[in-house]
Length: 84
Image 1 (cartoon, one colour):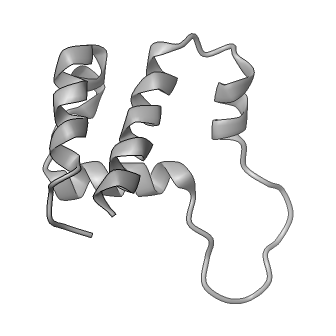
Image 2 (cartoon, rainbow, N blue to C red; image 1 turned 120 degrees about the vertical axis):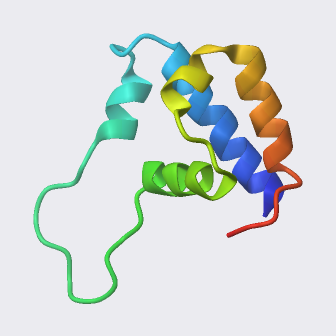
């Protein structure tokens, strides 16, 4: 689980370092239209990332993500973090 979390966080940082007009941003921010069938609501990828950061205790991820070395340190710590 730690490796998966680390890869999600690594990609999240990569998304925030690129400009917002690339196709990847559009895909990651896309929300489908229409109604879902009854049942458990679907999880969005970015909600899992935010939950991972909340479990790890990252308070202000917007400033951490802009410092690449601090972000990579946090990603490395996520590999051994117990949680979720």
